[in-house]
Amino acid sequence: MFESSEQKNRTVEQIQTILNQTTPGLLPDDELRGFVETNFIKGRRFIHTIGGHRTPCYLFEPGMIIARAKAFKKAFQQYLPDIGFYFAMKSNNFPEVSKIILGCGFGLDVSSGSELKTALELGADDIVFSGPGKTLQELDIAITHNSKVVVLMDSFTEMKRLEKRAARHEKTVMTGIRLTTEPYGLWRKFGILLQDLKTFIQESKRYKHIKINGLQFHSSWNMGPERQIAFMQELGATLATLTSEEKEMINFIDIGGGYWPEQGEWLQPAGIPQGKQGESGNVKNTKSAGYPHYINSSVPIEIFARELSHAICEHIHSQVSCKICFEPGRWICNDSMHIILKVIDKKYNDLVITDGGTNAIGWERFETDYCPILNISRPAMTERECLITGSLCTPHDVWGYSYWGRDIQGGDLLMIPNQGAYTYSLRQHFIKAVPDVIAFP
Ligand SMILES: Cc1ncc(COP(=O)(O)O)c(C=O)c1O
Image (cartoon, rainbow, N blue to C red; front, side, top):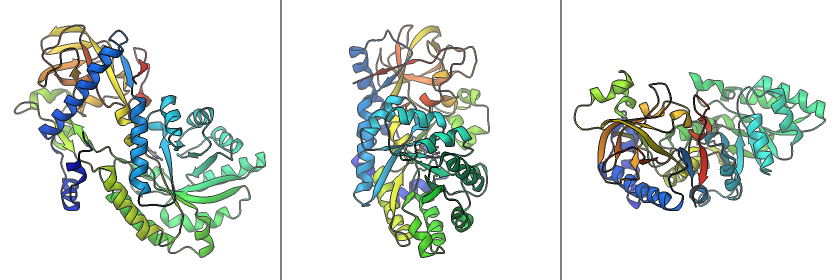
C-alpha cells in the first residue's frame, strides 16, 4: 500500500519539498486508513489460521522478508553492475530472519561476536563484521573464519590489535576501513576521519597479516538519500588524493544501511519537536482537536537507488572501479513481524491492560512513535481514544492512546503491525518473559 504508484511517481521536486519539511506534517488520513484496512485483513487471517490462544506473541511473516529482499536488490541492480547485499542482523536477530535472507543471496552484517557466531551457525560464508570496540575474543572468531569474514576496522588501535591476533594465529585477514560520517556528536564514535584515510592505508602496509580490501560508511535514519550523497561527495574528493596503488587496494565500498521504509516515521504528538518539550505522559491533555498523528515522510527505495547510483557514478566510480555493498536492516525486516496481544483487563471504557508488556519491544517506543492498534476481534474503520497499556508493573508500559475497532472488551485480540525492526532485537526479560514467535505463512 505504501509502495503506491502515486508515491513512486512523485517528482524530484515533490520529494525535495517533503524532505525539506523541518517539522513532521499531519499523517494523511488516506495513508493511515489504507494501512489499517490492509492489516485488519491480515489480522483476521491470523485469527482464522492460528487462533488467539498463544498471546502475547510476535507474528512472523517469512514471505515478507523474501519480498523485501528481492525488492531491495532489484531497485539497485538496474543501475549498478557489481553489488553485494548484507542484512544488518542487529535490526532483527531472530535467526530465521537471517536464514531466509541468506537464501535470497544476501550476506550478513554482524556487529558482535554473538551475532558472528549465529551467522556462522547459519552457514553464512559472506559476512562483514562492523562496529566499534571489538574484543580480542571477537577478533579471534573472525580470524579463525577468515575465509568467510571481512573485518571492518574501526580505528588505528583496532588495526594494531587485529594484526597482533592474526599474527598469533598465522592467518591473513581481509579487512575494510570504517569511515566516520559525522565528525561531531555521538556518531563520531564510529570509524576514522576521512582526513586520516591516507595515513591509515600507509600504516596498514607495515602489517603483514592484514589485507585492506575496501571502505565502509553508514548513516542512519535516512528519510531520503541526501546525507549519503553528501558524504559520497566528500569521499570522492578524498579518493582523488590517493595514489593509483592505494586506489587499487579498494575493491569494495560499503555504503551501509539506514534506508527508512517508505511508510515514513509515524509519531504521536509527544514525538514531534513541540511535544518533546512536554511530558509524554501528558499527551492526552495537550491535544487540541481529535487525536492528531504526525509523519516524517520518506522516499521509496527506487528513489534511493536512482539517486545513490548517480552519486556513486559521479563521486566514487570516477575515482575507483569497485564493487558497491549495502547493509540494509530496517527496510528489510520492519514489515515482517507484528505483535499480537490480548486484552486481559478492561478497567474503564478508556483504559485497558493487555497480557503482554512493552518488554517485548524493549523501549518506551509508543510514548513518542505512533502505530495503529487494531482490535482484530471487533474490526471497524474507526479510531477510538483509549489508553492501551501492558501488564508490566511500571507506568511506562504504553502501547498507545487509541485503538481501531467497534469497541474493546476483555479477551479481544489486538494487533500492532510492522514491529519487525529494532523491537524484537531489543526485547528483554523485564518483569515478564519475552513472547514466542509464531510463523505465519
Ligand atoms: C554498520 C551498520 N550497518 C547497517 C545498519 C542498519 O541500519 P538500518 O537498519 O537503519 O538499515 C546499522 C544500524 O545501526 C549499522 O550500524
